[in-house]
Length: 284
Image (cartoon, rainbow, N blue to C red; front, side):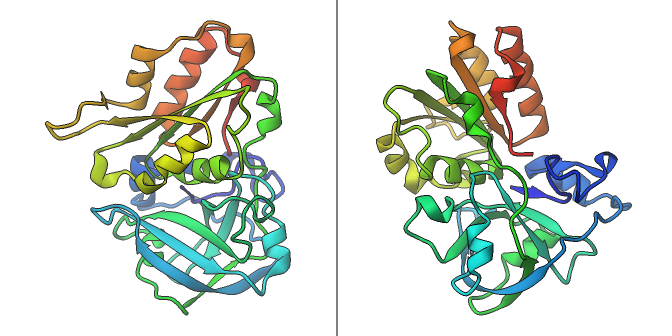
């Protein structure tokens, strides 16, 4: 998941009228704009970190896993305290910083304490795509601390059922959320509606078994599947409208990450069914 501007939760880094979250198709249109928005104020501190791994995350190589070795950056690692937070990057190919959601769980909840992992969309001509061409040992300039509040899960702490919605690279911070332990409480039912064009563009399939063992019910939704696909078809919001059972909205919560249209449609549907907007979480 990529932001070209800091999250809304960072008013000290960005004037409100400059904020715009970008991911997947919306990122393609915005990043191709001939007139990019004014660059936001820079983080107070920057540092350099080596790339430790770069590999394709999907069979069609539209998404890549990128890892940074931060074993010598203790304060930066310690600043990652919540799933859904971002790390600023300053890339030579970009006149402005970009902000990538961290896909690995916070170090305090993970055995992998010396690195940050990211899911990066390889969109030709965009700054983030240049990350996919790096090799282990290459160095990148990043912010000295992560930014954003992440998913404020305490707001759904009393929910008995949580619906999670992700599309495309928006699954990146959702992975961080799941692998930080969210959903492992047996008193909470967690369902993940995960949308992609097809299985060739769906990242983290190799992690599904682990996520299900953690208590997550996964509903893959493909907008352009092949003829052999027997699961949910269309867009995430369409699949939800076909299967939703919002019986007691006061005991439910939702977490959204991905396409703007999806988040808007799902939010409208949930609010119409009686769910409080305060129980609908995003990380921007």
